[in-house]
Image 1 (cartoon, helix red, strand yellow):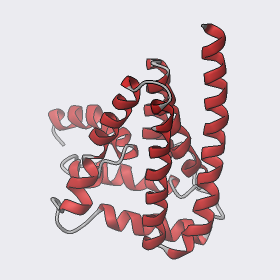
Image 2: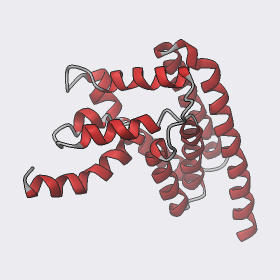
Image 3: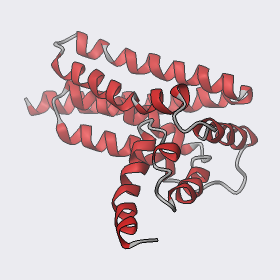
Amino acid sequence: MSVIMRIMEFLLVPVALLSQGLGVNTPMLFNFLPDYRSIFRRLWERHKNPVSWVCRPFFGLLIGYGAILHNGMIIVIGVIGLGTSWFWFPKWKGTPKWAEEFINKEFDVLTPANAWDFKRVILPSALPLALAGFYALLWFLSYPWNWLGISVIILLTIVKVIWSAKLEGTVLNPLTRIVLIGFGLGVVAGILLFLSSRIAV
């Protein structure tokens, strides 16, 4: 590998891993990096830990709270958490069969034969822009419409659960419980952030 390619890989791999957590199909878009696919595959195994799935709705809500409260630090924490929490936790020795099968099937979805597949590569990779626009809208909306906008995050999560269930039927019940835990923690965080913002005023 040339020196230039090594430098590019050093700089771009962290960006790619963060982008993957935000919905970008990085195994295809960053396939030009020689070692990225193997790095991704190793970290993707860690995503079979269901705890990482709890983090996604939690950090999704956190970004929304940051936008509503006009707090850039909360937004940054939420984006980094959402983008990287998929590989925070090690794979369990006794990984549930439904988690194993679902993540393996999701990997197949992420690696289609056509590198420019619209539904599997192009469309998902535009998701961060759509989410950025939505969170920007929450920033500018006034009360109570900004808080009602949080319901859109819940709706999008329900759509993802339905998509996941279509991909692997056995994942529906455990994934629903996991999402509810993530939302529960997110609601608690939202209450605390809202109260602290009121106290600060």
